Image (cartoon, rainbow, N blue to C red; front, side, top):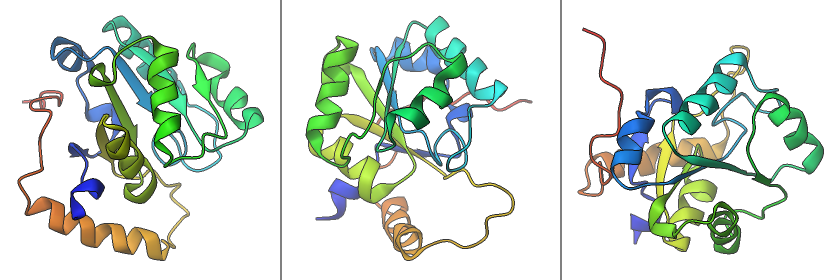
Length: 178
């Protein structure tokens, strides 16, 4: 019953992923949520995120932003990023995820969705049959109040950590510095 809420992987951030390894595993496209996945809610992209997208593209992967935000927000965010997007997506509706795969011109088995919310991002990706990575949500340092949904997510993450559904994508993390 809880499986539909379990991500294929759970990682600290988008910066922990090794996109070359992901490409070598046969994936060809990365679909990203924006707010709380790449930047704190409502913020513009950062030089680090801009560089990340260049790194992802250099690895041979296509990218797409899939968000429930409006187009004005997305256009402001991608000012320095060359990537298609789908805004007002209606996540977790599976149709939005499948549309993203179609826009990228890949099979859904070649796509990975990356987001920060179990009940929207992970659920939608699982319902559409797309592998997914849940990242710890990004917050501004001044934010301290987390909502009820985040508290419930913590319960699901505890159950997930005890399940056999972890690490279904295998080794996709950058090597830890020695």
